[in-house]
Image (cartoon, rainbow, N blue to C red; front, side):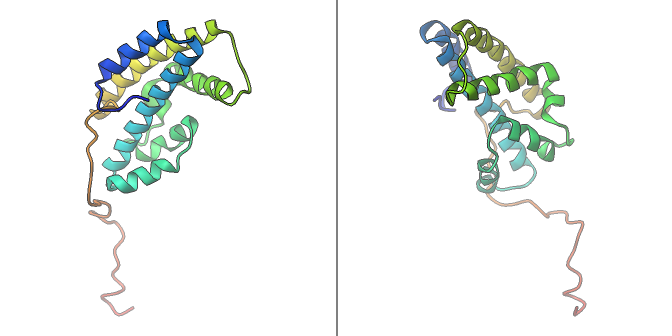
Length: 171
């Protein structure tokens, strides 16, 4: 869809342009894709921040499927062990969660609503996107686009609470 080599401003402007150029349902799906990508990238950065090398962190995220699964895993990696909806706010989470459900129904052919519904949902998603980027920047110093801080070596167990003392004592 949109590469992280593009600026966030470019992508946001493109999403706004698409509201006039695409069918509202298409614009909605594209906007939901972008929102989920931002959430996924912030979670990736949180996993890396816990000490996992980037490659291992990407493997962890590859096994997390869907927006609700991302939310379920969030508090494991948040530095203060908070759930995603507590960080971004329940109202913002509801917009995103409802949009994910609506998107899944549309993509899988289970449900189709009027173009007016998709237009309104895309507008609400763009507002939610502004909110989560602001919150993520304030909370984590990273808004899910450029500037991912890679880690090449693990820093896990750099301060272990469990040691292997039995090996030195002949056990």
